[in-house]
Length: 351
Ligand code: IPM
Ligand code: MN
Image 1 (cartoon, helix red, strand yellow):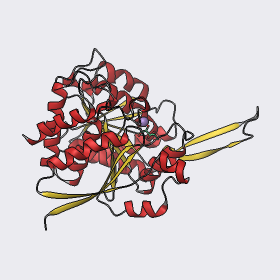
Image 2 (tube, rainbow, N blue to C red):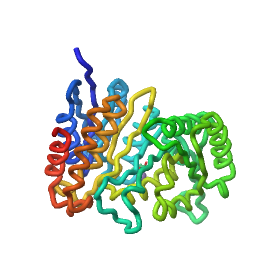
Image 3 (cartoon, rainbow, N blue to C red):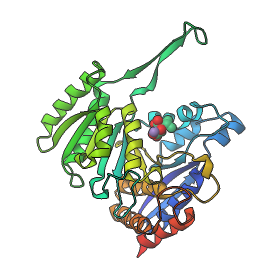
Image 4 (tube, protein in one colour):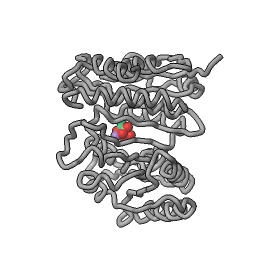
C-alpha cells in the first residue's frame, strides 16, 4: 500500500463549488505515486437555509480525523452577516486550532498587476497571520442595545502562548530554504500599548533565538504604504489576526487580485484547511467566469503541507503556464472560462 490521503472537501457557497471542481481536477492530474480519497461535505448557506445547521458536531468530529480540508467559499446573501462566517469558517479554524493563517503573496512572471508601480519580481512574501486569537475570539459585549446609550465593546485577546507559537512558525519559515531569512512584525505598538507591547517583547525574544534570521518592525498603516511602494522589502510578515486579515487583502491585490490568492489555515500538529481567500463572488456564480487559480493554489499549498513537494511543484508549473496565457486574473476578463483555466493548469502540470 502506498501513501494515501483522505481529503474533506467543502465546496460551500457561490462560486466555491466551481473553483473547487477545478482544484480537484488538478489534484487528480498530479496525484502520482500517492492516492487521494475525497469526502464531500455539504456546509454553507444552502444547508443553513434548509436545516438551520451551520457546522453540526458530528461533522466537526469527522473533520478531526481527515488529512486535510479543502474549502471553497462560505457566505450567502439570504443569511445575515456573521452567521456562516462564525458558524462555519471561524468555527473550523478555532475548533481545529488552526493557529497560523499562511498567505503567500507572489506574482507569477508575466502576470499583469493591478497596481502599476509594482513589479512582479518584487512580489514574493508570505504572511503569517495569527489565526486563533485577537479580535476574532468574540470577546466583548453590548448593553442597552438599540438605545441612544448603547455600549459595545470588542476585545482583542492576545496570549503569550498564542503569540509565541505564531512567531515561532514565522521564524522557522523564514530560516528555511524556501525563504530569504527575514521576518517583519506588523502591528500598531504606538497605539495598542498592551497587545503591541506583548507582541514586540515576544518578537524580540524569539528573534534572539534565531540569530540567522534578520528582523524589522513596521506599523500596520505604514505596511500598507510599503506593500504598494516597496513590496520587495518583505519576506515573511507576521501579524495579528485582524491586521493580517486586512493586509492580506491588499497583498492579494498586489499579487494580481483575489482570483489568485490562496491561503492555508494551519495546525502543524493537527488538521489543516486550505482555501481560496476570495469569497463567494455572487455576481459570477454559475457563469463559468470566476478565476479558479486561487483554489488551485490552495491545492498546491495542501500538497506542500502534506509533504508532496513534487506534485506541488507541478501544480505551480501549471499555474505558471495558465497565467502566461490568460489575458487577466480578473473574473470575466481572463480570456478563458473557469474550466478552461483548470485545463491549462493540468496541461502545464503534466507535461
Ligand atoms: C478571510 C475572511 C474571513 C476572515 C471572514 C469571511 C470571516 O475575510 O478569510 O480573510 O475575516 O478571516
Ligand atoms: Mn479577509
